[in-house]
Image (cartoon, rainbow, N blue to C red):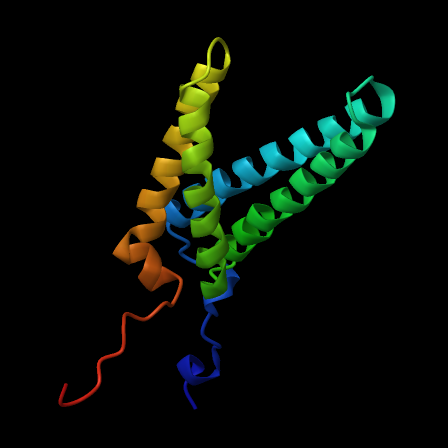
Length: 149
Protein backbone atom coordinates (compact mmCIF):
# COMPACT_ATOMS: atom_id res chain seq x y z
CA UNK A 1 0.00 0.00 0.00
CA UNK A 2 1.40 3.38 -0.93
CA UNK A 3 1.44 6.37 1.40
CA UNK A 4 -0.34 8.35 -1.27
CA UNK A 5 -3.47 6.25 -0.85
CA UNK A 6 -3.52 6.74 2.92
CA UNK A 7 -3.11 10.50 2.80
CA UNK A 8 -6.49 12.25 2.86
CA UNK A 9 -6.95 14.97 0.32
CA UNK A 10 -7.56 18.41 1.79
CA UNK A 11 -11.15 19.57 1.67
CA UNK A 12 -11.97 22.86 -0.02
CA UNK A 13 -12.81 24.34 3.37
CA UNK A 14 -9.45 23.44 4.89
CA UNK A 15 -7.97 26.75 3.77
CA UNK A 16 -5.08 25.19 1.85
CA UNK A 17 -4.15 27.31 -1.15
CA UNK A 18 -6.82 29.90 -0.50
CA UNK A 19 -6.56 32.52 -3.24
CA UNK A 20 -5.92 36.11 -2.27
CA UNK A 21 -9.04 37.29 -4.07
CA UNK A 22 -11.27 35.18 -1.79
CA UNK A 23 -9.53 36.55 1.30
CA UNK A 24 -9.81 40.12 -0.02
CA UNK A 25 -13.48 39.59 -0.88
CA UNK A 26 -14.17 38.18 2.58
CA UNK A 27 -12.36 41.14 4.17
CA UNK A 28 -14.39 43.68 2.18
CA UNK A 29 -17.65 41.89 2.97
CA UNK A 30 -16.74 41.66 6.67
CA UNK A 31 -15.84 45.37 6.67
CA UNK A 32 -19.28 46.27 5.39
CA UNK A 33 -20.96 43.95 7.88
CA UNK A 34 -18.95 45.39 10.75
CA UNK A 35 -19.80 48.94 9.67
CA UNK A 36 -23.50 48.09 9.61
CA UNK A 37 -23.35 46.39 13.01
CA UNK A 38 -21.39 49.26 14.58
CA UNK A 39 -23.84 51.76 13.12
CA UNK A 40 -26.70 49.75 14.60
CA UNK A 41 -25.05 49.61 18.02
CA UNK A 42 -24.51 53.37 17.85
CA UNK A 43 -28.19 53.91 17.03
CA UNK A 44 -29.18 51.65 19.94
CA UNK A 45 -26.92 53.62 22.30
CA UNK A 46 -28.29 56.95 21.11
CA UNK A 47 -31.81 55.61 21.52
CA UNK A 48 -31.12 54.54 25.10
CA UNK A 49 -28.76 57.26 26.31
CA UNK A 50 -29.37 60.20 24.02
CA UNK A 51 -32.38 62.30 23.19
CA UNK A 52 -33.67 60.94 19.89
CA UNK A 53 -36.85 62.29 18.33
CA UNK A 54 -38.38 58.84 18.67
CA UNK A 55 -36.90 56.22 21.00
CA UNK A 56 -38.84 53.42 19.30
CA UNK A 57 -37.61 54.49 15.87
CA UNK A 58 -33.99 54.71 17.03
CA UNK A 59 -34.15 51.31 18.71
CA UNK A 60 -35.84 49.59 15.77
CA UNK A 61 -33.41 51.20 13.33
CA UNK A 62 -30.49 50.07 15.46
CA UNK A 63 -31.77 46.52 15.71
CA UNK A 64 -32.38 46.45 11.96
CA UNK A 65 -28.84 47.62 11.20
CA UNK A 66 -27.35 45.04 13.57
CA UNK A 67 -29.40 42.29 11.93
CA UNK A 68 -28.42 43.50 8.44
CA UNK A 69 -24.78 43.61 9.54
CA UNK A 70 -24.87 39.95 10.52
CA UNK A 71 -25.70 38.87 6.96
CA UNK A 72 -22.43 40.04 5.35
CA UNK A 73 -20.48 38.86 8.40
CA UNK A 74 -21.84 35.33 7.94
CA UNK A 75 -21.21 35.61 4.20
CA UNK A 76 -17.59 36.64 4.84
CA UNK A 77 -17.09 33.58 7.02
CA UNK A 78 -18.65 31.41 4.33
CA UNK A 79 -16.34 32.94 1.72
CA UNK A 80 -13.29 32.16 3.84
CA UNK A 81 -14.50 28.59 4.18
CA UNK A 82 -15.23 28.53 0.42
CA UNK A 83 -18.91 27.79 0.77
CA UNK A 84 -20.85 28.31 -2.44
CA UNK A 85 -23.93 29.69 -0.62
CA UNK A 86 -21.92 32.69 0.62
CA UNK A 87 -21.74 34.28 -2.82
CA UNK A 88 -25.46 35.17 -2.83
CA UNK A 89 -25.57 37.18 0.41
CA UNK A 90 -22.26 38.85 -0.46
CA UNK A 91 -23.58 39.81 -3.89
CA UNK A 92 -26.82 41.19 -2.46
CA UNK A 93 -24.86 43.21 0.10
CA UNK A 94 -22.81 44.84 -2.65
CA UNK A 95 -25.86 45.58 -4.79
CA UNK A 96 -27.60 47.18 -1.80
CA UNK A 97 -24.50 49.26 -1.07
CA UNK A 98 -24.52 50.91 -4.50
CA UNK A 99 -27.68 53.06 -4.04
CA UNK A 100 -26.51 53.96 -0.53
CA UNK A 101 -23.18 55.11 -1.96
CA UNK A 102 -25.00 57.12 -4.63
CA UNK A 103 -27.13 58.82 -1.97
CA UNK A 104 -24.03 59.64 0.08
CA UNK A 105 -22.28 61.04 -3.01
CA UNK A 106 -25.19 63.43 -3.59
CA UNK A 107 -25.10 64.68 0.02
CA UNK A 108 -22.91 67.44 1.39
CA UNK A 109 -19.88 67.61 3.65
CA UNK A 110 -18.35 64.51 5.19
CA UNK A 111 -20.88 62.22 3.53
CA UNK A 112 -19.22 62.58 0.11
CA UNK A 113 -15.94 60.87 1.12
CA UNK A 114 -17.97 58.16 2.86
CA UNK A 115 -19.88 57.64 -0.39
CA UNK A 116 -16.64 57.41 -2.35
CA UNK A 117 -15.24 54.79 0.04
CA UNK A 118 -18.47 52.78 0.04
CA UNK A 119 -18.69 52.88 -3.76
CA UNK A 120 -15.06 51.79 -4.11
CA UNK A 121 -15.53 48.91 -1.67
CA UNK A 122 -18.78 47.76 -3.32
CA UNK A 123 -17.42 47.93 -6.88
CA UNK A 124 -14.21 46.14 -5.90
CA UNK A 125 -16.18 43.42 -4.11
CA UNK A 126 -18.53 43.05 -7.10
CA UNK A 127 -15.58 42.62 -9.47
CA UNK A 128 -14.10 39.98 -7.16
CA UNK A 129 -17.46 38.23 -6.73
CA UNK A 130 -18.16 38.05 -10.45
CA UNK A 131 -14.64 36.92 -11.35
CA UNK A 132 -14.86 33.46 -12.98
CA UNK A 133 -11.89 32.26 -10.93
CA UNK A 134 -13.75 33.15 -7.72
CA UNK A 135 -16.82 31.32 -8.94
CA UNK A 136 -14.68 28.26 -9.67
CA UNK A 137 -12.96 28.43 -6.27
CA UNK A 138 -16.36 28.52 -4.55
CA UNK A 139 -17.40 25.41 -6.49
CA UNK A 140 -20.22 27.13 -8.37
CA UNK A 141 -20.97 25.54 -11.71
CA UNK A 142 -22.05 27.48 -14.75
CA UNK A 143 -25.54 27.34 -16.25
CA UNK A 144 -26.71 23.88 -17.17
CA UNK A 145 -27.29 23.15 -20.79
CA UNK A 146 -29.76 20.57 -21.96
CA UNK A 147 -28.64 18.14 -24.68
CA UNK A 148 -30.11 18.80 -28.08
CA UNK A 149 -31.20 22.33 -27.26
